[in-house]
Structures are given as C-alpha cells and as structure tokens.
Image (cartoon, rainbow, N blue to C red; front, top):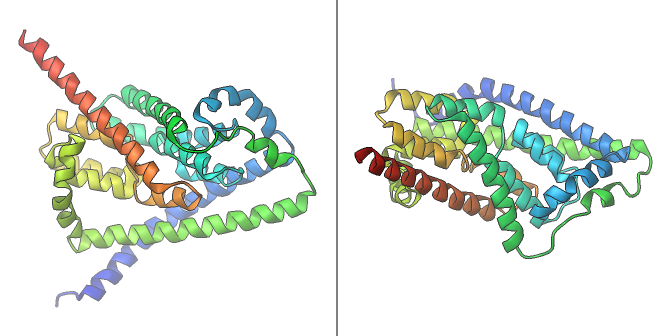
Length: 313
C-alpha cells in the first residue's frame, strides 16, 4: 500500500529528529559557552582592553574592536558562535549588518575548507578568497550604508558594571531566548529541506533558478548543488554535495566555478534568518555576497580564458 502524503510527511519528521537533535545539542554547547565567556569579559572590564587593541583595524569596517571577537569566533567555529558574541554587544542595525555580512562570507573555516578542498579546488585559495572577500565587503558596506560608524559599543556596554547576580540572571534569560529561537529554526528548516526532497519540489525549483545561473556565470548542471549549498550550507550539506559530485558528470572547471560562488554565498536560508533575527538587514546580507560571488565566478572564467589563450600559443 502506498504512503499517503500525511504519512510521508510524518516519516520525514521522524527521520530528521535524531540528527537534528545532535546538531542542536552541539550548537547549544557552543552558544552557551561563548556567550558566558563574553559576559565574564564584559563584567570584569576585560573587553575594553581587547577592543582598544583591535579597534584600529576594525574601524576600517566601521565596527568597534569588540566585534573582532565575533568575527574570529565565526571564522574559526561557526555562525552560531558569532551570534553568541554579537548578542552580548550593544550594536545598531548598521554594525550588525556589516559584521554579519563579513561572518557569512568567512565562517567555519576549519570545517568548510576541507569540504571545498575535497571537491578538487585549492584549500589555500578558498581561505584567501573568503578572508579577503569578507574584508572587502566590510569596507564596501561601511562606505555605502547610511548612518555613522559604531566605534565605542564595548565601552558603553561595561561603563557600569553593577552587581554580578543581576547581570548573570539577565544573561541566562537572553541566552535562553536565543537558544530556543535557534532550536525552533533549525528543526523547522531541516524538516522543510527533507520534505522538499521527498516530494520532488527541489527539482522543480531547480528549473526556476536556471536563468539565474546565467547571471551568476554558473553552468546549468550546478543548479541542484547551488540549491543544496544555499538551503543547508556547506557544513550540513557536505554529504549531499560530495555525493552529488560523485554521481554527476561535472567538469573540473564547472566545480571550480561553483566553488567560487558558494564559498562566499551559502547558507542563505538558516543563517540568513538567524542573523536577521539579531538585527541585520537580510537583503543586504544576501545581495552584497551575491555581488561578490558574481565577481569571483567571472574572475575565475577570465583565468580560464587567459589560460586557454596561452595554452594555444
């Protein structure tokens, strides 16, 4: 007897619960740990010293020195750890948007670089491209976004230390709200992704996105992998991406073009929603990285063109 749509949906939910639960536990550990460390840094007035030391560099991006901790945390660990730091700082929408864009361009380096490298591209190149792109986006957004740079958020945050227990209570409450929000979003998105696959909706979506691939400079054969990277990212979607690559007949150049795009622009569902919930402007996060990704892909095409010209000679 064939399954009804309702039964198929329930099966999808059952199938994602174990893996999603493990992911949530892992994320909670990182989020709570980083957030608690930040709370202690602020309470004991350590953060201003760090901010003063780093602020000359991050002032180029219109950001206070304290945001460097969020960027480095996201760079080395993941977006969730960066969010944990960001939510402990007093930042306006402008600073949060610039910082979030930089984090989305260059995050989870220790996890995502091996994934990209396994597809056949240079790991060193991917690290360099993502890092430099994050800095370029930070400088560019600081120049074009309205409003003034935020350069003293950390000092304001610790000006009045107050009693420890009230601050600890406030931290517990704010962290609890953040954790609940993350858990709800992660479960919902994982169910959505699994249901879209089960009912063949992703294949239909792929047809819609084919014209967009031309603008991005990407081959049509990379549409599905582009969707996977955008929906569930490089970390969560690593298995799906590598499995698809092993079964598809993509050329080495097709893979390099795809990697040039998704190394900068991926996780445009879950991470975009999470960062928007912290105060970032979602369409700036998306369009600025799409623009950078387009530049990188067409630059890669230029490299291919020049290489072909010299090889013929």
